[in-house]
Length: 448
Image (cartoon, rainbow, N blue to C red):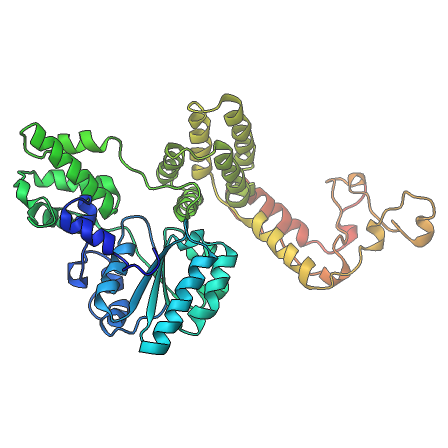
């Protein structure tokens, strides 16, 4: 709403008692803002900037219910700037231009700054973000963007470089319990008038259920108190459980947390922790992740992190990829669990992965030279006249099926990309290559 005070409607609803508990209990000062001590604790950068009314442009980034909008609310009531609000879902370039013109006029006539709060800024397209850029850069507006998505993925680099990213994290359970106790005691905005009797364990249960989301915690509390009052009972763990249903798992297949869970999944298998790997697998399955996506991660991990220490891991991963498509969910979770635990427990070697990375780097960054003459194709007419294939030793003609000869181009003669680890089956490769790389004369091995 252009030209309307940032939180006027919310404020009216709060006073009238019509808003949900989470809105009514929204803090209006930093002293009432629980959690995020690393961001707005005493002496921290953002707190100093708010208190000195010297705010730079910001991107507030974090999961739902961690205080992004609340911080904007606090800024709105703590500084002398004018405020405008846009929602990226419903606003366009035209709305931006109207606000910019009003901000210019305000700055010219009254030397008053304008703070523009944009909720869900990650939903602004490139044109909308580009339209903001020059006015953020020249100080016409101070931008505060709020997003649940990683801004380094979703916000244009030029705009991002002109803002300070402030990351908010999920609230600790202790902070959630304090927020709930305040809501139960507050007679003006909270549930104090209800004089609800409650078990402290019930509040701890809500904190555990809401996964660091204060808004969700307050919503559950409001519903649980209503149910307890209707049943003329104390607020208990059983009532909370009945209201909350299944535990809320924060996992958005398209969000930043998606990448965090997938990253933890891979790193748990790489780190040989089958229990952690199964936990993150369960998170993905519970959230409806595509099993083909999970299977692809298994195949990659089997090749990159297990490698030749246990080649069976890649075979099992590929079989799992076929199996999950053949049987579908829910049964597909069984072969997935089998593959995950096998890969996690298998000996690890990334020697093949490191080797191809180094080989690719050489191919892209240096003159690697021509293919040696004795390795060139000699089958076409006239090839031998060019010297192709001359001097090539056919390995099968020798006792071990191997003969030392140069395979790399001359420019890479001393390069060794593959360094087997002394782990699992790859230790056999290490011993074999150590022996063969030590031989430097063709005559060492005689033909059959």
